[in-house]
Image (cartoon, rainbow, N blue to C red; front, side, top):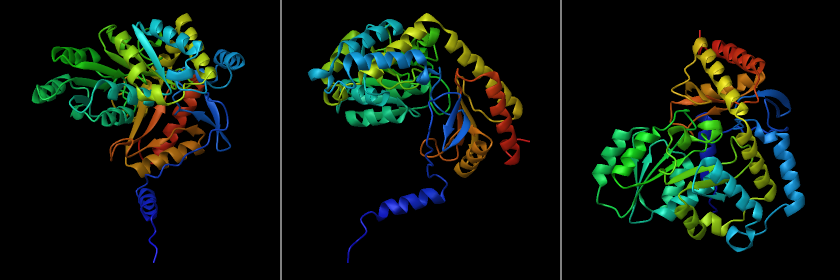
Length: 395
């Protein structure tokens, strides 16, 4: 008698369905923008990471086309063998100037950047002090390093100090790592205070600024710029797939570290380089941000307007201080139904539940963008009000 070796998958999917946690993956049939076509329906886009509207920007598209004509569609090799093209070095040099960093090394994604840098800096004899709400890419990178992982209370410098004190002298090297902007709640790490603790205990200090890139700091230069910590943060991880609207990631910081990653970072050594078209589009994105702050300014104007209106309607939007606006609903089934009804009203805003967020903290995560006009935001607010009252979330 044969045993169904895939029964565990069927059981898990059935359990996810029963708990209202099964993810419904929708299909986008148009370029990213304020209004997009999803599953055949034109809807207002309130859930992509396209903060500045660069994913379909004409200058980025032209740059990508030109790079394909010059370099071809792909590098056909890893960076360390035959995949480093002149355009990769140009991007790294431009990002270093933009970020005010000594050096930059680029990777295939922000997720890959975290998996690259953490295992290169710490190992079995070391310890990682990690914010309890850090992103999955940090968690996975920490696990790959095989270092001891100690979580400290969320955004709590005093809590970090206590955890470090408990473990002091029991390790060779120590790394303190935090998200800059936390992607689920939209709050920001107190980077200056965390840096002081790390420095006091001689720990390496690292921040993942995936959701601060293009959003925080002068003209979108990020969380390190926001706190004026240039030259003091050892490692700043960034992504080019959110505000920059393309794909890729990078590590910025001390040149000694970025040069070392070219020798030791496994995604650099063992995975093909980013395509020339993508790299060129990212360079064009840097050009735009260096020339003008208009897109970043509009992003924040839209954010202030939408958040104030949602609060006035009576929604719980948590402690967010960034364009990430969580609409807290509690249980996953309610969040999924809320998202479904928003879609019927012409608004695309996905529900997030466990394990993306803790149980009992399901939400609709609204992502504000510079592509949105005031009339778009008013349309979205009207839909939220309608669905919120219908489901008894607001009065």
